[in-house]
Image (cartoon, rainbow, N blue to C red; front, side, top):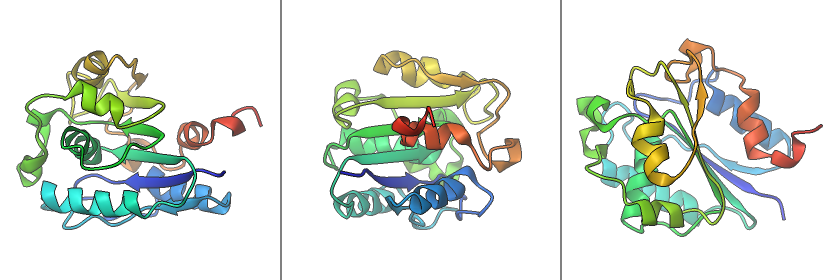
Length: 189
C-alpha cells in the first residue's frame, strides 16, 4: 500500500511556491501519493490549540497506507506537543526539520514553547523512524537540535553545514534529501 504524507509548515509561512515543502508536496503528488500540505491557521500569530486541532483533523483524514509526517520549524514543536498530549494516533514515520529552541520561538508563537520533552510519548508517536535534520547555523536554534532534541530522543540528527533555518533564503527550494527520505525505496534510482 502506498504511503500518504502530511507536510506541516512553521510560523509566518504561507506555503510559498519556492519553499522545499511546497516543492516536496508537488513531487510526491506527481509520484501518485496522497499528500496534504494544509495552510495552518493564523501563521503570523499561531495558537497551539488551533494548530493541534488542525493536526488532529489532518491525521484523521490521511489515506490508508503508511502515514508519514514532515514538520518544519514551529510544526516540529507542534508534533512534540501533540505527542505529549497523546492527541493523535501513531503514524509510521516523522521527519522534524529545523526544530527551533523554545527560547528562540518568536513571541507570536509563544504557546508552542516547551518546558520539557516527553521522550516516551514522542518515541511512541511514530511506529517507525523519527528523524531530525538541522543546521549548524540556525538562528532559531543556535545551540543545535542534536543536544536539545536528538540526544534526549536517542536520535542522531543529520546536520547540514551552514544551512540556516533550511528555507529558500538559505538555498532550500528543491531539496533532494526530502524526497529521498520520504521515498527511501527510490534512493537508488
